[in-house]
Length: 362
Length: 258
View 1 (tube, rainbow over the protein chains, first blue to last red):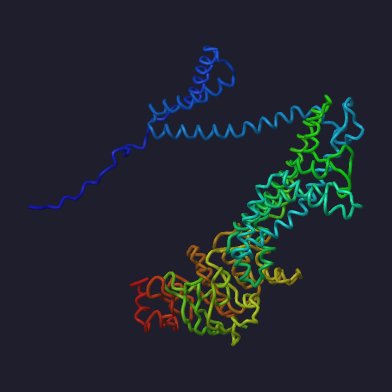
View 2: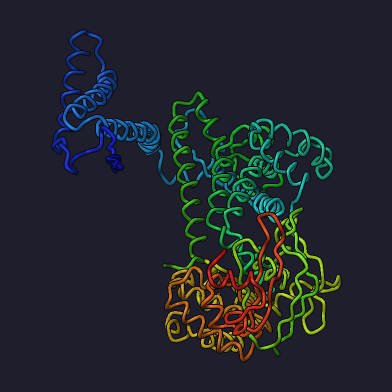
């Protein structure tokens, strides 16, 4: 007699029988951390190896091991691995933020000394090694002018280039442009400076300058725009690609020409991302020292004319003051560095707010 | 103002792939025509070739004649933007412009085509929103973003945007497939009203919808995957759904295949 037996439902061997599981108490992780710290301190100072840094590093490692072990015993393997990985991810975050916080703290604490009206109101003209005052007014003016001109050159050029590559470019020519933009991203700033020195300062500008080489803020702006252009093109390109195709088709279906669709639908949609890309490029350019040194030459006096004579910039000012023999110079360098960071921060925030103002609030 | 459409031997390609072949059909003015058929049979491709949206995709092209009141839209001297202004389109997924308010979305077509006068825009916005049955729901928040509306409202906003430029034909590519039954009903009601002013062609996967809204129905099909889609049968909707003359149509509408 053969009766077909229904196959028994098989269960995987580790399938849980219950939805409840034992959990470590809330105080367990801090307790493990404290124990790890104590053990690490005892080990470090007990063996004479000493040092607070060693204690913290050893404690962190012990904490990871200890937490995993305790969780493994109480909660099981999966939960233990979960705890281990989330602890590792949080440590990675702390490791990444620590240098940033350290930089900001160093800048603020050391830069505060010369944070006075003199610093923002005067230049280094006629300031000797024994003079404690002097300021970075000329450098601030230089940075603003050079980065401003560079942005004026780069933003239209970069936007148009990205629009060509994304919206119009087909086939090999567009692929070639993309390739060279990628290559340009990697150009060292000193090379950009040398290029402008050889091309503009020594060859082209003497034509307008009675045959003398024309070191100027404008030359620095040219060098900076060589550096900014690839960043602007690449980030704009990525942002334009993110604009969904149905939006373009929606506009086409209304009988809107392609160029107007790009101008009035695609660009506004991508604007916040484009602004972020431009500000990244501006931040990079504002921090460049070598090209400015090469083609604008630096200088101690205020020069409002970017097309004539030497100009300084904040980054160059930091470089020169940091290497200066005067005992008052380091303080100026720190304050200038702080000013530069603050300037970039303010510009970025302003640009973000401007690009958002046109966006509709939700 | 609604126009008659004649397709003669329309064949469309995606690069080397032939998506539809030799489509012949005539759409009378002020009617609703439904295009039905299994996925991949070329209904949407055919729809998109009526307002020259097919060629937007790289490598895509159309052969054959497509005339609007006797004028071939594929002639060399035809302005694509003029074709698209005359033949509006509503897409499967609502696609309001995210940077624009409700008002700006509705008048986008006019404004981007150079209409500046506030009174004209205001009037067009109100008329189109009323025609799309959306006015009462949004009249107090015209300045709010169009993307903040519900899916059904967004789709009606897109319809309002389409009819604001006063097209003569409105193409709808599965306009209700992303919507719930109530929003779908609202849009079907809307189609009945719009029929007085526009020629409407709608692609739908929902056969009840085709039976409810359309006067004429075209059934597209493919032999097997990779073959071009063909028009199998084109007749009055009532006839297609009660007594189709081709066996394949009957199989499809009774659910035996597809």
